[in-house]
Length: 273
Image (cartoon, rainbow, N blue to C red):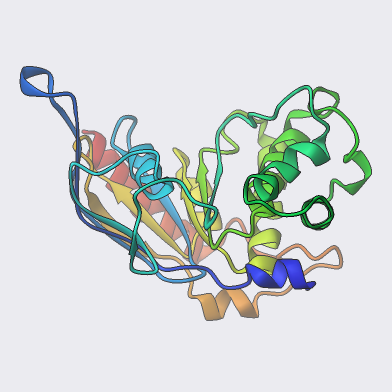
C-alpha cells in the first residue's frame, strides 16, 4: 500500500442511536425510521436489506449528513454528524459524473474541495484510479466508458477524499448481472486494500450475503432492524485467500452462505408481509 491508500487504512465507528426520522408534519407526517439502533465497528462492511420504502437509503443519508434526524443521534467516531464531510464518501446508484470533465478531473473534485494542491489532488486521483483499474482511461470523458467503468470511476471519486466511511446506495443495481458480479469482487478487493468502513444498501439478499461482514434486515416502514446477521468476522476476511489479480477468493455458494441467505430472505419476506 502507498501512503495515500494507507491514510484511509482503518475505518471509523458509525453509530445511529435511537434514531427516528419523520418526513412531513401534521396529518401528512410519514415516519421512515423508528428507534433505529445501528453500530458499525471500524472496518466492517455492513449491508442493509429490506423491502422497498423501509428506510435503508434514509439511514444512509443520515450518516452522509444529507438529512438531520428527527430524534436520536448519528455519529462517526463519537462526533455527531451535522452535515456532509470529507470523512464520508458516497456512491449512488447512478455514477453522477460530470460529463464535461475527464475521469481524472471528476475524481480530483473531492481533494480539490478539501483545499488540496493541484499536485496533491492529481496524486490522490491517480492512486485511486489505479486501485480501481482505470488508469488507462483517466483522460477519457465519462460518456466514453461502459456503465461498469463509470461506476468504478464513481467509487474512485468517493475514495479520493480519503474517507474513513464509504456509503454505497444500491451502487450496482442498474448494471447487468455479469458486470454486477465483477464490481462486487472489485469492491471486496478495494475494501481489503483500504480498510474503510462500508455501509452498503441493497435490495439483493444474495449481494448482502456475499459482500458483508454483517447484514441488517429492516422491517417495513417505519424501518427498524429485525435481524442483525453476522456473516463473517474481520479476522476471517483478513485470512481469505487472494487470487493472482488481487481479488478475494470468496465462494458465492456453500452451506454457510446458503444458510445466511435463507435467514435473510425469511426476515425480508416477513418484514414485507
